[in-house]
Amino acid sequence: MIFITIDRSSSISLTQQIYDQVRNGILEKQLKEGDRLASSRELASSIGVSRNIVLEAYERLIAEGYLEVRPKSGTFVARGTSLSFTENTRRKETPKKIDANKKRYIDFKAGNPAIDYFPRKKWAQLTKEICLHSSEAVFGYGEASGMKELKNALVDYLKRVRGVQCRAEQIFITSGATQGLKLITEMLGRGNKTIAVEDPVTYEMRNIFTFSNRQIIPVPVDENGIDPSGLPKQSPSFVFVIPSHQFPLGGILSIQRRLQLIEYAKKMDCYIVEDDYDSEFTYEGAPVPSIQGIAPNHVIYVGTFSKILSPGLRIGYVILPEELISDFEQLKWFSDRHTSSLEQLVLARFIREGYLDRHVRKMKKIYKEKRERLVLAIQQNFEYATIIGKSAGMHLVVEIPDTDFHSTFIHKIEENGVKVYPIEQYSLVKGKHKSRIVMGYGGLSLEQIEKGVRLLREILDTEK
Image (cartoon, rainbow, N blue to C red; front, side):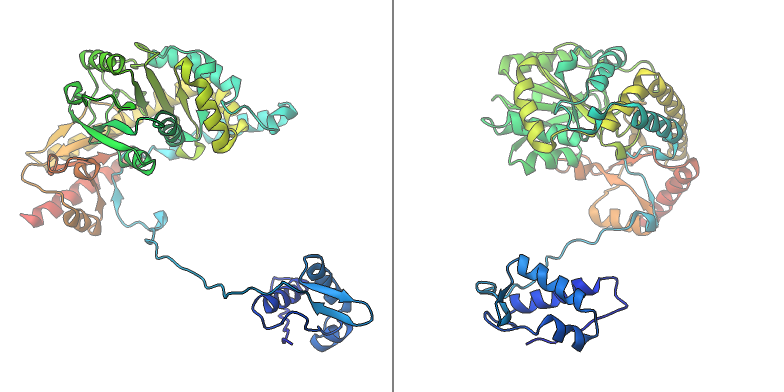
């Protein structure tokens, strides 16, 4: 027998408490196969509850096979209900994550958009209208490739702003660019496990490739983007590039290098995967058109709305050459069936009715002002610093001569109220960028930018 206790102050129902204690007693061998339980009337009287509560718990245990009723004999523990081993809880130590609300430093993380400018009212209005007036089909299962309304809107938008050439059937809506790149890696790496990747490159992309057990071949990058002369002699499954605003060095790939890259892909019979994550934000001149627009049969184009609107939306897209559509559709279906239909319809209207263009124009002014403030603060506080990267995006690179931003020093900077990101942490081949750091400004206020640079100078002064 086991002793059953009742806690009336608990949020767990009395029936559930009885059920849990009897069930656990059986599994832990406190109650053995064939043991007779107290009758429902006896148990109810001993613990001070209604008999109906005990009956409900017993009936559930009988239905699940833990107990059996023997006519004229009573209720017994059923056969085959005891575990032959003891289940011990296995715990794995995991790194403690810092609560974002408790951060005590100014974070110059690249790629953080100014989410306080997200157009909440308009987005909420469109969401409400779509929920109220859409057909019932919208609330069912959708196509793996995405809603035709959004894909049609993207065809026109991307042709106009990025020079992308495609049909709606070539577009797949994904849960951010991350999912798109994961599926591309899985699709193209079935036979050839090598990927030619810009070096340095964002570690999120690098992790996607390595997690898929692919061999990364680093290709050098300078202030003008990937250097085609460093591409491998053997054909990779694809070449990953960020040509419109390379991360982290910030270069824009010249037309000469773009053409060399296309010629390489044709010669090697491989694809170029073009990541176009924040090209809308160019502050000097017009954005350089996509590589995809020049060679749509050799380029897989990946985009996202995480930087333009909000990471919380989790909407990205992949534009594929015609011959890859069928394979990718199957992978997407098995990955998550389809991306949120409601969010897609809201975004489609947001684009089609001109709200995205207005938002981008607004954010370009805001980010340009933040960039100018950051550049000025760097120039005022660091006499010999060099700013690297074109006037675009939401980050820049700062090179401070005779400074080694090794991990211990970076940790000390963070402890003193500033978080910056060394280029070395993005590098596959180490040792080339020790004096360079990435400084993002998208998610910071003007006051935080100035204060952060000033604190950084004070910390560096103490090291001299």
